Length: 425
Image (cartoon, rainbow, N blue to C red):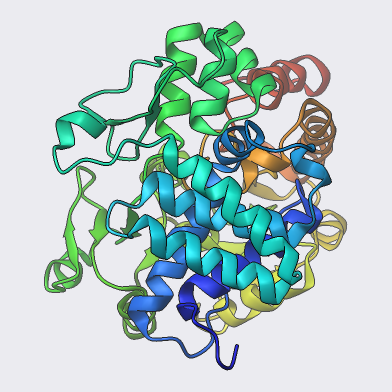
């Protein structure tokens, strides 16, 4: 804002966090808007926003220790200032505490009202007092997180030391607060995988996920010539190391490359080289797996299905580059025209995203037992549609990026009982 003392990146982060607080837990998916801010300020804004979303529950817990009213009863603008300021105080070593506090206070005075600045100032100063400040990192960091009551896990695997044992005494509740994962989710993981694995999974949700580029077989040489791409354990993936602007330029200049994690691409890769003439991507989204199918089945006709209008438009733009091999339609149209004729149906279904929370940072807040049950109903419906498309001997690939039993093994078992499918893996 004109005359603001705030860094434009920080101000954009506070703006967006206030907007998210107004609709929590249904957080938005739109990218952070930093306007024409310099790239360095834009990067700072993104980092603050990402840290605040990941550690929302951590920050709200520590702030709640010093609030006279419930966290959720505060105005969204106050929450935006506390989230952005708290994220900086807890997780940003290079930002002076006074700078983070002052800018959050000034922003809240403008965005909410002058009195809001006093509350933000008082609570952020209390949060700052929970973090020992020392030039000796041994006094402020531990090499590993042990889920002690006086430490918070960091993205690099170390732990931030708190001034005292502030976190809950109950072990699973402490994991939830420390990592910013809802308690019901931690308990469910503990029941399914055991407490140790639940802690391990939760720790990985706060890691800074690298940007991974998929380079289909036949073009790794191109990827190897680019200075912003480094080797990956997978021969068809590279790690992107440049700036956001460089990534945009790379993808525009080299359309044969795209962003896709190895775990996301593994499902289609596991299909191997079995021939297929008609392939349907039943939940194509923006076309990531569609592009992979085009590369893996160079002789096949690919049909990409989607119900969302903006995503359908993205798919149509992709079809313009596919030399007539890609057709785009809605799922019901595919069922009407292709029933019983498809060699392969890919059902990469909508899911809770609980297996990719390091990447889908907002999903930890949207997910709930009710949502998982609703998604499971939708997943069964999609699998049923997919089966109706299969030709005799055809295959259906079902995949999620969820860890939940109800979205994975339970769906596979249901498909075997109700639809007569044979599980291959």
